[in-house]
Image (cartoon, rainbow, N blue to C red; front, top):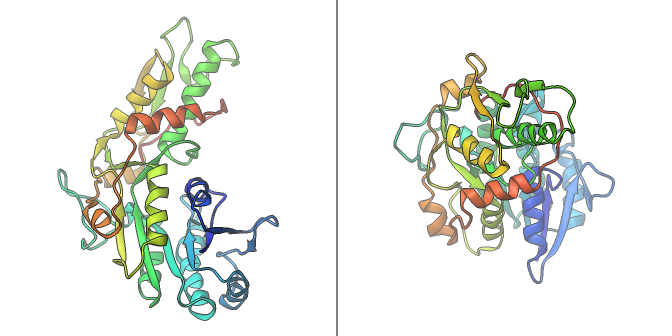
Length: 324
């Protein structure tokens, strides 16, 4: 089986690629802008014709689209999250119409949830911001393509290599800096207070009162594998999360415990993101993924946080971080 992964250099793309490389009787192809890629593509700028030519040469049995932008201006978000999937679908219809397409969507497409309730795939989407809106546009393009395609709506992924654009990744960077400062490797107190002694550091964050559905990046990769190789038609959209909502405050506290952080965690007024205020609750019903793929999360949140902290790099992080 020939599987092409687009966006393999990204956070989830890296986990997906590692997982698929271990599959027997599988030839994995990596697509992206790098000259080292097996298939050189840029979903943000390639024309359907250019992409179709590249796909025809690759002759994939399945394509996994992990390419996506979580930040940036309106043009960047639209080009990558909305235009990209549309162009990919047009090219696949021309060059590999029988290939299975697995596209990574986002739970942000749903928008604000109802407290205490898990959202199912039949829920009418109502994204609260531009990111969710552009991801929804990509999902709609995939759904209208007529291809053998499935969109995995991913919750908030946690695990090794989480980027600084995510709250777990940014908090990890802050904690790594605090660790370096306490060991005498940092210069100045920075975001962590005066550093007058052990336990006096402060981790200043935004509002952490929102609830999120955190899922291990390795479990996301497992869902992608099953979606790529499971025979027969699949539902057009499947939720991939833990199925549980956790206060962001709890995640930060547990990550701090893993890091051995002995200081105070301070939620600064006015530092929270607009999305956190608009989407106070997010939790996915993952029953459909279990029924269609036989998938269920295998990693606990503690295991996810252990993996995240083990992958840390002691780089400078922003002084204030808002909830996702």
